[in-house]
Image (cartoon, rainbow, N blue to C red; front, side):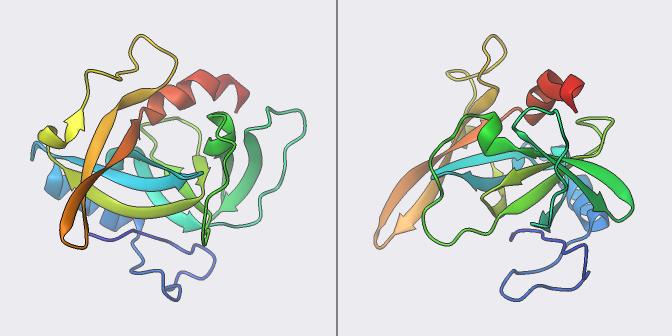
Length: 190
């Protein structure tokens, strides 16, 4: 499954961006995969690291657009955008997590718009690039070692992604973030 990307200004497929998927199609994918015992995540890059959030916590992914800054807000709140008539607050996830490395190679900043189950307010998170929507089974996820329930790191687990490199198979590690907890901690600033 590829990335889902909505160019909300043009509402047409962007060149070399893959298929455009509306929020209705995201809901259809969610329904068809519910109860399957697998985890579906949106994978993205911050700096040079791989991260993921639960697909059920996302509404859509849009191209980067001009953000109107807000005065007297924390530095990780980049500002607001008008998303089809709805004012949406944009959080720079890299700055919020104190990631200082810049992404290597070609960078296509994206905004992941979060679902209403995450916050009553419309929120989007700014990331360096969105890679894919992927499905993992429980054997690929280490939930115990790095769980965030008793810490401030907001990590639900580590996902092992098997990648073929030539004739070898290796594992990339993806940090699975608890985006609900992260937003809850800063909601008073939004």
